[in-house]
Amino acid sequence: MARTTSNMLPLGTKAPEFYLNDRTSETGWFSFADLKGEKGTLVLFICNHCPFVHHVIEEVIMIANDYRVQGLGIIAISSNDVVNFPQDSPALMTEYAFENDFEFPYLYDESQDVARAYQAACTPDFYLFDNQDKLVYRGQLDDSRPGNGIPLSGSDLRGAIDSVVYNRTLNEEQKPSIGCGIKWK
Image (tube, one colour):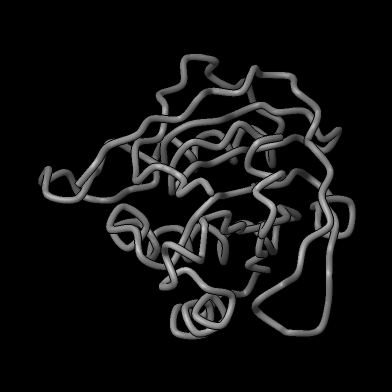
């Protein structure tokens, strides 16, 4: 299993805008502005087949359910090349979202332009923006990885979200996420 780390987009970066197709509803295309939350917005790059994503998806769903009711927008994006990795196709994205009870959009970045704008490098890759759309956190969910024996807690990401939602001081020492590399065309 290849391990790729986040590129760590500079803190304070304004959220790159996008307009992508939502694979959870088949009903529309959405921009960052359409989906951002009142208190802040979590953008995560994931895909259907990555063992690192499979390892964390239950905790990601719990985080989404815990915080979206508190004004956090949650947006998942898949940017993988589906020609060479058909298991990440839009149809299977819809199935994956349904099987995992996504209550947030799962957008398809066919051109990979959005992944480039966010400097996404791996799945999962997490970006947390405040209510002014400025990046305040980028990095890991927690220290757990497939096979390392550390239980999932979501502690790093939850701490960052708490700082945004409850207007607390955020630790600027942030660890990069580690996962499967984005499958570039």
